[in-house]
Length: 424
Image (cartoon, rainbow, N blue to C red; front, side):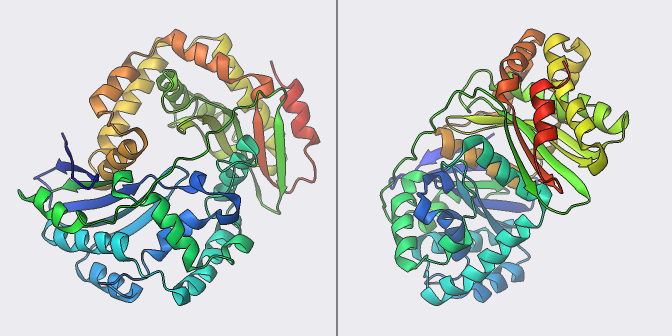
């Protein structure tokens, strides 16, 4: 499905040729994210992502970059996570060279002008405020802070306004030089590719500057002896909550069973939580569950947007479902349906060049290898009923629960009573 080659400068190229298409996604993923930051530069990974769109030596203004991209009917964007950042342009196949030229110029020769940095501080501040005004988005920042505490994994990716206001050009140059090395990057091309694609990639990316790189500070797992609860007071018409536990990292063998467990509990309209919380009781419009791993830890979470007057009942129902899956075995039909759902959703997503580029790029930058879809599905298919039950029993323990709530609640006492002495 794909070909992989490493250039002499250390950059890895992954190509996924789909000749039946007329488009290409060009993506560069970097092993740089917010967990590589220290407290005094928290937010710089995300800020730097913005600055790459503000002009380079060849394309000196944001307007020029946007005009070229729009003029060829392409779309470009970027995303910053805690363990990686990626930049992409999706264009018609005939504009692949232009896409590579723009991305390579942004990475090699970004101007990082002081006046642009100062202007962008206002943009970043408004982005952070926008997220804080959106409880369905902001609750995830609060939850990770609750679970991971005062560590890089617990800090907001966007940082804090008062820290961001202090950034200057030397901060960006120092951070860029520490992580944006070709050995710490991967270039992914997914779509209709020319025969000389490797040569084209070398032409644009072989002269990336050779920078240093360093690793993040590992997350130290602390034994949790009682539930953790945080209530963020906000006048809302709906209570947003995330109930979660620390889970498995991305190398743990149990991660496949955890993924299946997440599907059974909270993916799709026939999942256990959807049926119990929404269909049978009408307590929420949206409820879901899932497993998200990092390199050295992870989280299994349930999210729900609940009626204010029914939030306690909703939480009780959620906890009851998590505990029921330990006591009552998942049925063969449920297990089969979950595996087929994973297979089907993956097949649908794999029709998108953006999904393919992001999947291959982030997997390689994190693991230095690719778990192909067939291998992933084999491991999912190998998950047994007992595997699911054992994982649920290991994860869903009263003392391991973390509850984050956003809503017009002045204290957490009612939630504490449910977590500590809830339904059994």
